[in-house]
Image 1 (cartoon, one colour):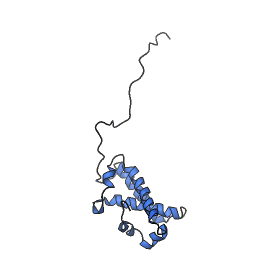
Image 2: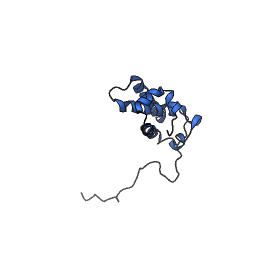
Image 3: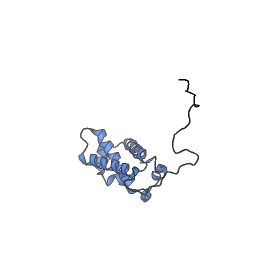
Image 4: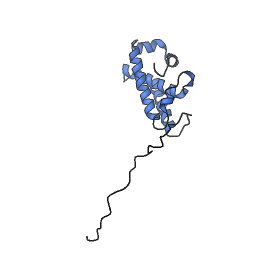
Length: 140
């Protein structure tokens, strides 16, 4: 596993159920974690330094980010088994995780995450200005 630990998942799901869902395939679990990390990162990447956030290990990791990634991972694993019968708890936890991440990005919640440091040479916007030279339209 990349960011999450087995203990993180064991807090949310019995190990035997996780084994049953993945069929004991560690590669499947790693790929699902990569997808969950990419999803959570895609929300946070514009405002926060995701390399620092997801580069932390152990107790240095932000607890709510760990929770969001774990809930996203489990939701997608259950969806893989049968997308039409995802347990209500998994759907609710996934919705809460994505709602929390969106609220943090929108400034509705505070998460104490490291902000992305902008390079002074890079423009913050992609707005261009200017135009064609002014034409004399008095003849019309």
